Amino acid sequence: MPLKVTKKERETSQSLIRRFSRNIKKSSLLFRVRKNRFRKRDKSKQMKKRSALRREELRKEYKRLEKMGKPSRPNKH
Image 1 (cartoon, rainbow, N blue to C red):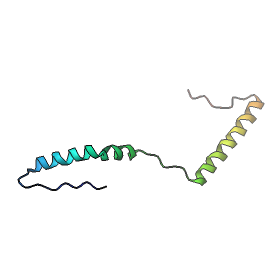
Image 2 (cartoon, rainbow, N blue to C red):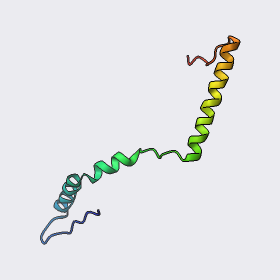
Image 3 (spheres, rainbow, N blue to C red):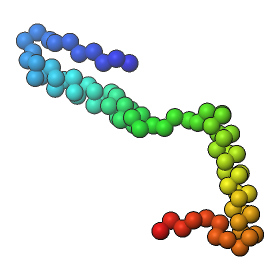
Image 4 (tube, rainbow, N blue to C red):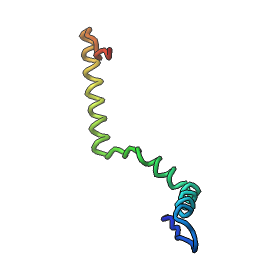
């Protein structure tokens, strides 16, 4: 939905810019653009599988270390 503003007869450039800005605010175009600015993309199937496998490996490793009596996760201090 492109926004079009044409200069009217005897209209100053300042008022044209003001009218354009008002139309942008009314259309909520700016709000949608800012909202999508930092939107994260969805993970692909391959990446989902990789992360799931990684989580599973880490769980197994934590359980193994726990059985050995060692701290399973490093401290974050």
